[in-house]
Length: 323
Image 1 (cartoon, helix red, strand yellow):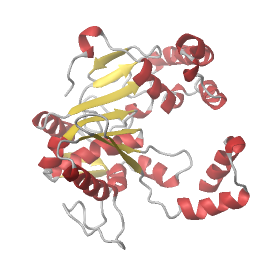
Image 2 (cartoon, helix red, strand yellow):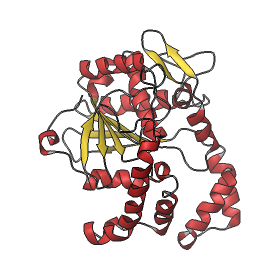
Image 3 (tube, helix red, strand yellow):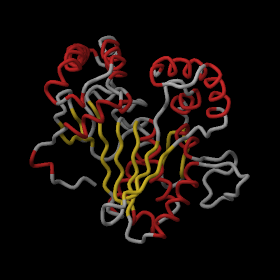
Image 4 (cartoon, one colour):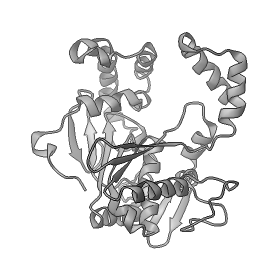
């Protein structure tokens, strides 16, 4: 699966690639197999005052079997007094077999790296060098789930100094990460530490609508407000996204009509919004595929990028603080 992915990516980027099959095979065995499954990037903006540190978790790559295994592991991991969480996401973040979630672990050179502990340590080091700095957490898809669960672990480990340094959590296309009890716990922590939590959902994106949420919230459920944007990038703040479990006969016609409009929009958006919004032919193919399964096409990063650049909220809500 991974090798097929490398071949496909090489073909898609053929005009800009300098390597061949040998380089492809070398990258396959060195870059992928030896890399950790969970990836994140950290950078610091020193131009603003106070300095801002961004921690961005990467979402699932199309040909990453470890990522897909993480997504479909729907078993529960339960924290006493906190709630139940998505076991696959927790394992990707740093849950250790037979050890659970100790507050501190050994982090020597020869020790296995766990995303939560590694990122937390680097944040400590950066923030100690600049006491006025703040940081934010963000991510798309799987990365969005890891971002909010990273905050959950900071709260569970009572990392008050880091929690006070956290400016906000911004997630895009985030799946549900836990049960109703977890949601109540996190809403209290968000309010206690004055942390902003923005959960962006674009149109018919299927991922924020999984795993399943029943009316009694016995299974998975979201917490915090939803910043929902339609296909015209017009937004509003809701308690939950419309058609919250995606599969609905009532919504089927609407989703199909909307997919047709998005395909048309992909050709006209450079003229209505500017050439920088021109979509690639690969994205147009995704739009065509969206005529059959709009939920997957709507999950693509370009629409979430457009939400941040072209999106708008009602004037009465633009200056509102969402906690």
